[in-house]
Length: 243
Image (cartoon, rainbow, N blue to C red; front, top):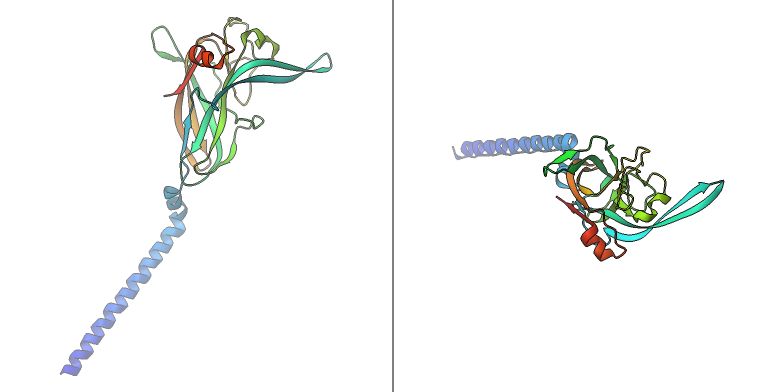
C-alpha cells in the first residue's frame, strides 16, 4: 500500500516538474518573441536621447565678434568686415543615448503688436537654423549623452556697417537702428531672415533621427539701440530668452 502511495506521489511530482518545465519553456519563448518583435522599441523606451535647449545672454551663447565676408567686386576678391554680435542656442542631450542627425527647425515667427498680442508673420520662410562653426550644416551628426553643441540663432551687425554686406540691409528698415538676422540655412533675396526692432517669438522644433520633434519658443526683444560695449548692449540693446 505504501509502495503504491509512493508511486502516486512520484508521478504527481513528475507531472508538476513537467508542467513547470513546459511553462518555463513557453515563457522563455514568449520573452524571446517579445524581444525579437519589440526589443528595439523597448530599448529606445529606456535608453533614448533627451534634447533640451537654453538661449540667453550668457557666454558662450552670445559674443561680440567680427563678421567677415569675401566678395567679388570688379573681378577682385575683397574682404569685408564689420562689428557684430552673435547669438546661439545651446543644445544639450540630457538622455542616456546619443542623438543622431540633430536639427533645429524654425517653423513660425510672431511679432507683438500694440494690442499686446503676438501675430504671425506670414512672410517668414520656415527653415533650419545652422550649427556653429559647421559651414552652414543643418544636421549635426551626433550629440553624445550628457554633451552639448551650439546652434546659431542669429546676429546683429553694427548699423553703420550693415550696408557693406549683401542681403543684410533691408531698405525698408531704419538705417540707424539695429536689425536682427536669423542664421538660416539660406538667406533669401526677399530678406525675410531680417527683422526690425520689436518683440518677437520664434517657434522652433528640436529633433533628431531617433527622437520625436519637440516644440520650443524663443522670445527676442530688439530695441534698435547699438552699443560697442557688450554689457550695455545686452542690457539695453537686445533681450533673448526661452519661454
